[in-house]
Amino acid sequence: MIETVLADSGKAWAAGDADGAFVILNEAYNRTLNARVGIRLAGLLHDCGHPDKALGVIAAIVVREPGNGFALAEYARILREKRLAADPEHRADIAAFKATVAAAWAALEADPMFLPSQFWRGIGDKHERMLTTQGLGNFKRTVGHNYQNWLLIDPADAQVARLAAIWGAKRYPQVALNTLELPDNAGFIWERHVPIYPLTDETARSVYAFAVGTLWEYVLENDHHGFLRDVAEETLGNPIALRRQGKLISQDHAHSARELNLLFDQLRLGRQDGFTILELGAGQGRLAEMLGKATNFRHFIVDIPPTIGVSQWYVSKLFGDDAVFKFRPFNDWREIEAELAGKRFAFFTPNQTRLFPAKSVDITINICSLMEMTPGQIAYFLGRIPEITRRAFYSRQWKNWQNPVDGNIVLKPDFAVPGWRPTYDRDDDVHPELFAQIWEPAAGA
Ligand SMILES: C[S@@+](CC[C@H](N)C(=O)[O-])C[C@H]1O[C@@H](n2cnc3c(N)ncnc32)[C@H](O)[C@@H]1O
Image (cartoon, rainbow, N blue to C red; front, side, top):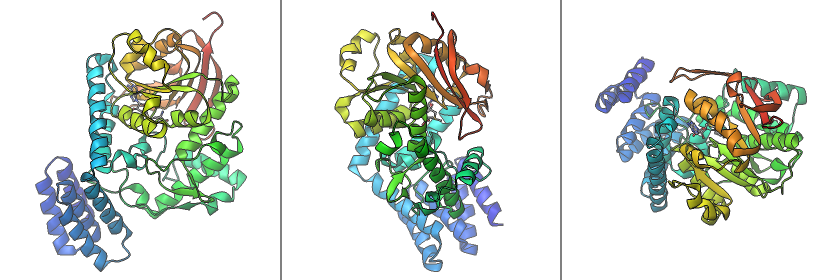
């Protein structure tokens, strides 16, 4: 019966009928005083602009059931979001973020070939809601779970299963000694009508801590270039606090170090080689962060809204506004060339890659992003990358991916770079459904 109430109210809420959802939840809650129904009722009240009423409903649940962690977690989320809505710094951050996002949308609409797939438009809408209500400062618990800090909470997940096999072979003792905080509910809330951050669940948290802890030990063992050793996870962005001997560790940093070790090994790069990287679809800019701290490389990010608003905010906060060429529309490379030359980081929308001069970057990187674009965009970028890149293209993608919204299927051969040859081509060592490739110009190309 409770499941029916949750399902029916969820359907009404998702369809925009908040009044209908309220009637269902309120009636069932008054009749049963069921905590799950009460928490959902509070979520709806908060979502409709009544945070104090929502807090009142949850407070009553906590008094009746003092050990109900889900109720306290939701109480904390509502409190945080209420405080944040009145915080001038948050308001200023969101106003600047929205201005960047609006300008980026205008640039794409003027060159519609680059408008995101329907898949990413749907994700983008949810991301904007999470960022606006929970703040850019909480992004590592919200949108970051759609970048590379995946919610590894299901033992049947292919990556979790692979990490379990790695742990079985190595039995890293440190994984059992790591500690993970008990988070509140301010996190990845995919559907507004199911306001639950998955990591508030104890079993989910244990799987996540095990998987990320194992990944960290595995990468540390193979950290030839010292990226993981030398670069600490930032508290900026509020990562879920998984600690190893007191130090914050994260899936983001482990993957960045793993990818950069591979790239540096294969291309025989040194940390002071001063190369320029172009990263297409960069999430929060985790590779820009690690390269920015551990090397003298420059890093250009090409991304769509709203992600470009997140990465530009994060990288600017980490390295300072003076180091960053922020996204802006321009018509000719010569307009920006002199200014760009003095910047370590730069932000562009995908359409602006038309304006990049030939061979203007050393290495282009794309991690788990090309496949999520439209077929026309994938073809465009695979053709454009060798034109603007001098040395190599590093790509990590799904072997077989069906876009669940746009419906197109992308297979490994679809990621071939015309006129270049793969000099590295292997299955990903921690995710059996992904592969990694490095492409370099064929002789004479
Ligand atoms: C799954 S996330 C991966 C993020 C990042 N590469 C990482 O591994 O942390 C996909 C990325 O591709 C970007 N993206 C999606 N569609 C795009 C498009 N049409 N053009 C450029 N970037 C796009 C998203 O905004 C996001 O940054």
